[in-house]
Length: 302
Image (cartoon, rainbow, N blue to C red; front, side, top):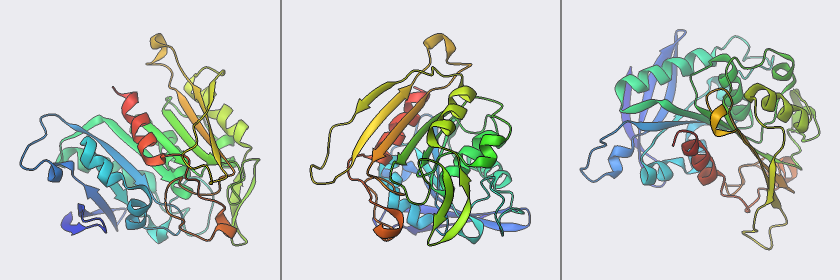
């Protein structure tokens, strides 16, 4: 194991950790909230949020997109940005150059190492991601039951191999943030495609949602709200649906939250436009994705 200190573009310090898994060196950027305490110490173990970049992405770009380190400093939680081999994750789709990589094993080992090395609450480990990273966060919940307390999947619905495979052994709270006009991961189902390169298929979003409602034993009826506009000139809006569970079911069932960005594309709302709009669609400015994901995660264990 090797670690070194570096700085982000916003001058928030992180530690670069190298972990050997399956004879490969794997890199992770870790933010430790204790650097923001001005000499104070954490008197309790704190949550860990793991954020997975999208296909062709990098750990540093995921921090730029999400700003989770600033939120971690404000609310005292750890943030980990792992780096995928070949800039991608084996998320259960049968794709070239990924099928032989066991990313689940890597994350299991990473969580074990971090929980042994830092004051992290093992019961409050959360995972989120965008696109390929969002698919992988879901896949991780299915393949490593009990590892993750809650998941958030942005610009990633449910791909066909997951939908047709074994359901999760344990329910897990999950939040979706999806663009209804996503040209890469189609809301109505079909080929996952970017710049004419296809990478598997997704089912219709309503079918994928039913997959998780059943897996989580959640109420099939939801409370739907149209969120207030943050930008009158944006041209998008967000519809939020909450599929809850009763207080008596919390151990056997988990909730779902769905935020559908009408007019939104393959993007992290209020993040930066990481690729040309003609390929990925519009990045909405109507939803504070990072803050809402953190709120959802912390609500599950409060």
